[in-house]
Length: 167
Image 1: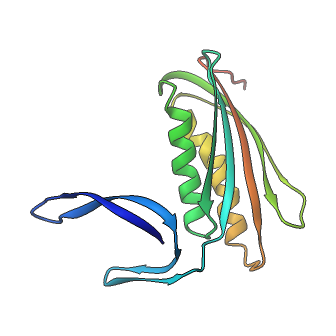
Image 2: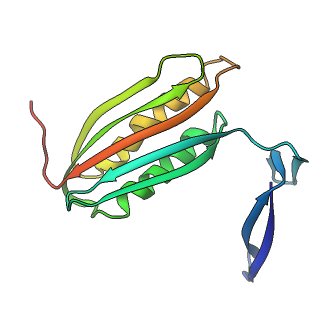
């Protein structure tokens, strides 16, 4: 839950809505239903720091740092969306491509979970790569261990414009 400023109202015959810019965090939203939203002031949500480094085939390196809410449903979904956007922003998505992904998921009091895989495809390699991060997160967060404390996600992706696969 955050302070916000309304930028504009977007009129629509079916469903008008307000476009806002978020400000300072003031609490956390605990429930979001069709009939209303419930939250508590002062109680800030637990966030997971994420660092993603993307090396393109054109020798450009971009590093993205962001935080994602720690939630069994939202963390894998938001990780997939943000990483996919970051990986695909500087690159074309049609044509041969290989993505080499390495990194780790850190859990308090446990050894890091290592990520290391390659994905090749004539199109859509980025979706395979982000699923390789989101799926272990979903399994971890839905494992039944209530005290699971994610400390961070660190991923490095290197892209080439060729298919590197063997059979």
